[in-house]
Image 1 (cartoon, one colour):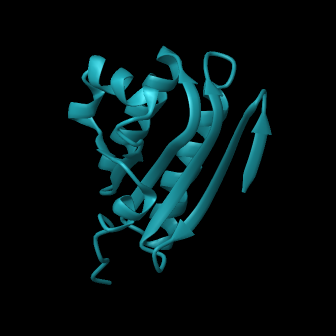
Image 2 (cartoon, rainbow, N blue to C red):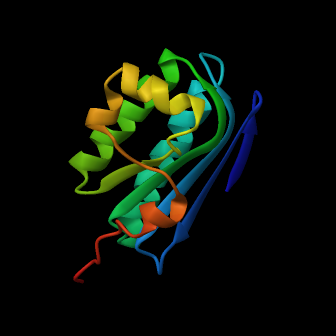
Image 3 (cartoon, one colour):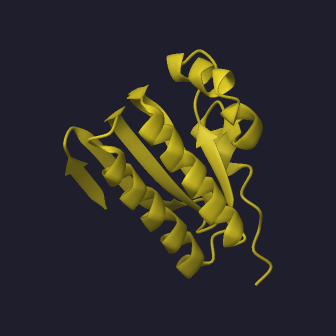
Length: 129
């Protein structure tokens, strides 16, 4: 699914042999677009739960700006995923300007942050079912 809304584009897709759901975000996340981010993250967690995937990957590589509303969305998604028994991983290369924001807000201590989508997909636990 791709949702263009107020300058924010999202996509939610299953990858890594159905062991991970990737939520890709493109654009800026602020007060006017945080609702679209919330919807995409909710859809990602729901799709992971229904498909049996154990990992939700949030790809922020194509995001230019994240306001506090977007940080709040990431925290809520992390908590929802944890409550559902899922792991949430954020993709954000160290050289990306938003990596410093996660460090300054200490979210890099709460969220699992990796440098690439490939690295995130290696974190997909195998579902024993």
